Amino acid sequence: MGIVRKVLGAVLLVVIGLAVTGPAALAVPPAAIVVEDRAGVLDQNTLLPAVQAIEFYEPTTVAVYTYNGSASDNLNEEVLRFARAERPEWISADGQKWADGLFIFALDPVGRHVGTYMGEDRKVSPEQREDIQNASKDLLRDAQWTDGTIAGIKRGAELINQPWYRSTAFLVTAWTSVALAVGGAATWLIVRWRTRVDSRRELARGDASYANVSMDLQVTELNAGTIPAASRYGSTVLEKHRTFMAKYNAATALANQVHAMSPKDLSRRANLKLVRSYAGAAAELDALDDVIADTNALLNRGSAWAPAWDRQLAPYRADLAAIEQMLARKHAEGGSATAAALRAFRDQSHRDLERWTAELSDGSITPETALDRLRDARTHLSELLKNHADTVIEGFAKNEKEAKLMRRDMEDAQAGSKDRYGRTYEPSILGTVYPAYYFFSVPTFNSGFNTGVGSVSSARGGGGSTTGYGASGGSFSGSGSSSSF
Image (cartoon, rainbow, N blue to C red):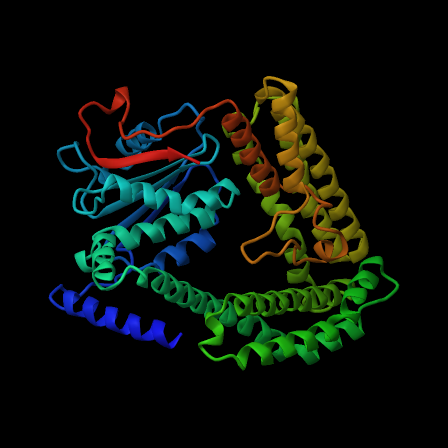
């Protein structure tokens, strides 16, 4: 290691000597962020702050466009069509290029295409465009649409208007001029730096959750002490609480362990896994103490029962609100009998929710009865979604082999998709009492649908890449391209 450091030190001196004549590189956030999520696949609560935190070399407007197409579509042509129709400010005054200062990241989750487009003052080489798209593809293949979009934009920020002394060509020349063997050492350093950054981010996430849990520890114990054990819901939440202190003590031990690590320790991959375990454990406890508080407030009709009840309704309300957008998608069989059943159930459910809340408020029903009704309604919605999945599969698949592919992807989605932190649980009373796969939600349906259609489209041999804008593009020659994933 000492030799490596000496060699790297010599190389660093060479690189610094070559780079000092270059202008200082700016680090600026996006000038603006525009999201046109016509496919309905992005979590903007995650996307917007993540993109806002990305640093560009020059002030750049970041535009994100998603739509549901097909494997045979030309994404370049679709992005240009959309810009001409709804976002003319994305196009230069002469109508021939993309607007200056603009970077567009486009995604077709159904047709499995990803595209990148830039104004003339932000364009990169074709190889770099491919690099940007490739940075997102592993995540996109796994239907992680938001994280894949963030990864692509982040790589774009690293390459757009990159100073010459930070370019790959310059770095290769600089390193090679000293010694070919340095490449391995440089890679090692970069990996350690990236690992340290990830470790610190996960440590901060864990600390935030752990602080919340620690601050509310006494309140959590008081809440648990008054949850009625005779209630089916209360007894199950109490079962979870019985391991709460053991899990808290384990999280405390992890907290002590990771906080004892030096910056050098945080650069090791094995320790990053440990820090993530701490962050995950703390986040799970943070969610559970909220559920314990809500269970106590709702079952005992405490002063905070109304907001607690609203939090139990929130996942179901989100499902109902997303049904129409789900049915409006391409290949979603929105005119089918199963789609009509979903719409009718949605309309009835809105009336039911108002009635249950009123009856709960005046004491006509008990909190446990209200939770039973919510459970039954979500179970019914799950069955309707499964029926509609069969309709979608029958409409899209051309043979049993394709149908089997789609069924597998839909079933895998229902088995429990993870959020960006690896959690599979829903932080609610029903989500605590029942396993993650018990309810089939609209986001889960969409995830399985996207993956299933993509699997079938790939199996049919669709995909490919292009740099043209199709027959409707005319003389437009803006910098950009798309490729399949």
